[in-house]
Amino acid sequence: MRRLSTTDPDFETRFARIVADRRESAGDVAQTVGTILNEVRARGDDALVEYTQRFDRYGLVADTDWRIAPEACREAFEALDPTLRAALELAAERIRAYHADQLPKDRDFTDAAGVRLGAKWRAVDAAGLYVPGGRAAYPSSMLMNAIPAKVAGVERLVVTTPTPGGEVNPLVLAAAHLAGVDEIWRVGGAQAIAALAYGTGRISPVDVITGPGNAWVAEAKRQLYGVVGIDMVAGPSEILVIADGRNSPDWIAADLLSQAEHDPSSQSILITDDAAFGEQVEDRIDVQCAMLSTGKTARKSWDDHGVIITVADLAEAPRLANALAAEHVEIATDDPEALFAEIRHAGSVFLGRHTPEAVGDYVAGPNHVLPTGRRARFASGLSVLDFMKRTSFIAVSEDALRAIGPAAVALAEAEGLPAHARSVQERLS
Image (cartoon, rainbow, N blue to C red; front, side, top):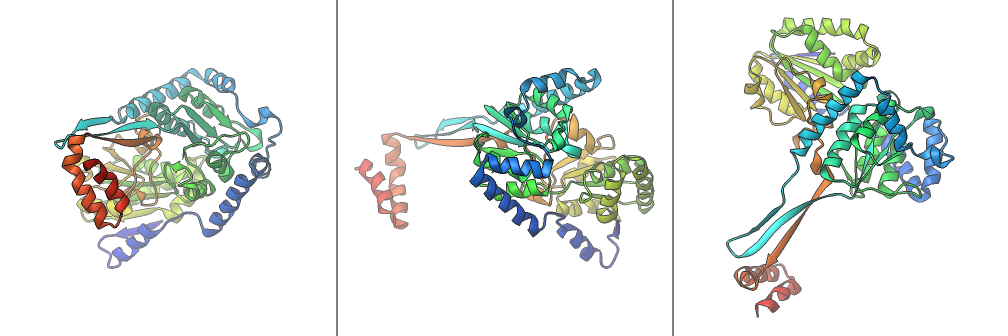
């Protein structure tokens, strides 16, 4: 864990190193993924059979080995403990309501020149969702990816998920039932992304692929962008907590560990104006790590990538936060709005002492699929718009063409495109 203070003479140099630290996949991952993508494109189902046996120790032999039936998802949902089922339903309801409010409106108007203009929004025909398996099998990710797609109006919603040793997470199946998933395939890794993008004998291709995954999955999405749309290239989880000394050290320690426990490459950063409070938080992290079932992962993440930054005044925090452009930013102060107004780059912001990041992962409503690796400078979290595209339209009357056509002719001729100019001029004359 690194300690920095803005009063240190070398602060800017050390802080710049933290900002530049990518913590993402190396070149050998890219090369391996490229080979897998080429194999799936060339050999289809046969390649999926081989990779699934090699990586997941699961044989895709009979038809029933490939897919998880809708009935299995329904049974998993009905078998849930009533308290857990109610929690899943509450999460789904809130996620659905928040994303329904994101639906864009079509435009159709006639401007002063008499030209009719507008745009229509339509959902993609098919979307693929990657859902991690094994230790990282989260029903919340299923809801966060599938519900916006359904709200957008996607007709075919396909899930690929690894089932190591044939093991299936019943909570993920229950979430799939609740979200209305159409197909679930027992395929994971980069090979699953390739199958969704290119299609195979069994799996038909999709138009957009979303969902979290390991370094190989993220790299596969990056390489296939353009063949399909993707939500984003996701890296390790991040949290930045801006907190004064009037917080509970236990609360803030738990918030920092909530992301550290995801992966050893995750990063948790605390910015505070109270050095003694920072030390208290560090002590509580030591205590809480020892009590977590995920303590080994969280401990390595904190030891390797954790940072505590002490500032003279919290007014300095937004500048640092904007440079970091973190996935999650908590502002635990008496007046979080004042700092929030100055934060321009963040995946999602959590305001006030009683708003832990974890509430956003499950039941708040906004999507928890967020940009990492400083991509919040130019990217946003997953939304219904990731499953939609906009088609503009133009209708020009004879009078309107007389009003704007000559300018089009002049510009076409200036660009050396005579056929463009003629297509307009013929109508004008």
